[in-house]
Image (cartoon, rainbow, N blue to C red; front, side, top):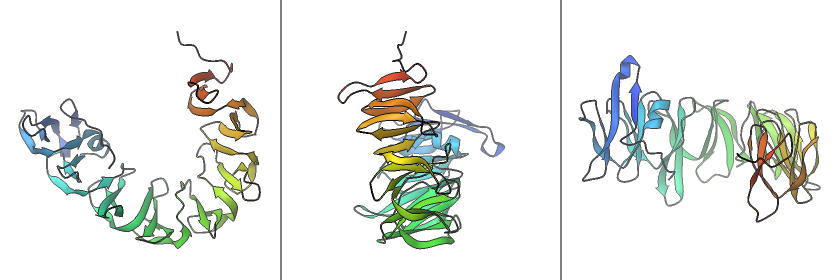
Length: 306
């Protein structure tokens, strides 16, 4: 189960809405080491029966708090201490636009997934073997228990695309879904219309900022990048590649470098790894086994901290 952030005794949430005009604070019982909620008078509003309390969850979702009981089951309480959902989930994802995927354990390594709203209501029943929520497009990739294929449905549970694609956990971006069928990869829209033909060995999710997706040719195994219409914008000449906010990291002849959307080299292919970006600099490892360092993308010099 994922680790839930602890916002314990020092964590306070002031809910300004008239419906939740209450100041709560978590407090640990000295004997049991369990947590509950107390009001401004230091009186328990919720008895100390929880191993963990997530205040940040309540702040983001408008007044319900994620709690974990002594059996490591997850539930939800509101700011008045009322149980919204009893502790029964084995795992919950973070909420996005008011919804979150939840999971219960059916057996060892055997799970069922569903979807709840921010009031704790199960809007999609826990009966799916696979469930992935894409908040921007308000759709879910679903697969039934023990089934290998997946489809697409909306938040009402209405099937948009029947289960016909191999499980392909790729990001849906602006209505475009990279999928696999008969060992070939392509891209369909939310109406199941083919946007990019099924002729690639691999297609990753589209970059929101650059509007391109990494793709791999089957005949030579090389990577390039295609746009939202399937047009090649970066030629298939790289060993691997990944788009970022403004630039693209690509691997050639065993070394990593950076290019722009026009395939112009921004950083030469001299690095064992490209780690992360920060404004106009990038963290890199020059050679295997060496420590990473920050490189200025304008001067191409190592950043020296004063």
